[in-house]
Picture (cartoon, one colour):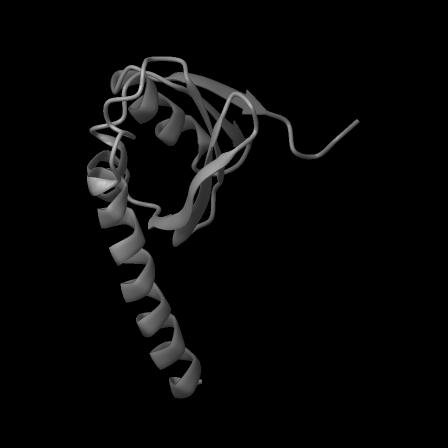
Length: 113
């Protein structure tokens, strides 16, 4: 189990660097409003995200800690965009946080019909 923790710590550090690169990625923060779509798969500890253009080109993928301050730091420079998340334990407060940041949030039922 300790070996897995070391792997997770190393992975977490790599992902933190990816999140930091979000802020420095040339042109991402300056992109026009509503020119990107971000999908988020929410988890208890980490949430995965993928940012795409409207033409489906992947701009950035990564993970962010499922904490308000981490999400705020990761996406604070992103102009108003559409964010799609699934229903779950964290969907309510994350959707509220993203809406406070100015994003349009769509919460979809992930259980199907």
